[in-house]
Amino acid sequence: MAFIAQVPLFERCSKRELTAIAAIADQLDFPQGRVLVHEGTLGQEFFVLTEGSAEVRRAGRLVSTLGPGDFFGEIALVSNVPRTATVTTASPVRALVVSGRDFWTLLDESPRTQRKILETVGDRLAVLAGTGARDF
Figure: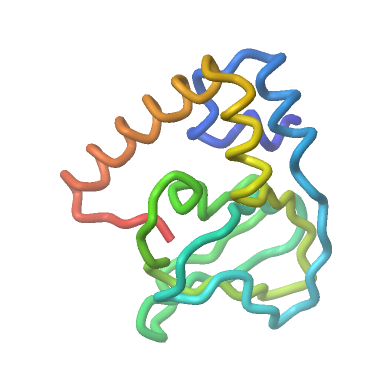
């Protein structure tokens, strides 16, 4: 739950809500060189790295390296836009992964959690739009 609590998407959630989100997260291991998300595809899940590192590339250019505690793909859970980058493991990686289906089931069951998360998404999208940055 500590890693889930660090994700800004969940910053307004209570400890109980964070526990429910953590309960739908799967802990998965990925080998070095595995593509986790492909630029241009629609997102179906989001990731929180707990061990290892991953490279973020846009149009083939390295733009960032992620490590434990970093996360990506959360905006894809609540929007229908293509991924803006490809993320590939640079070492063996352990990650928490939340599928879109599980995420939306949780939100359907908890309108209060849904409201908090969607308010945070709205704030984050406003910031991203103002800076020209994009989620991947």
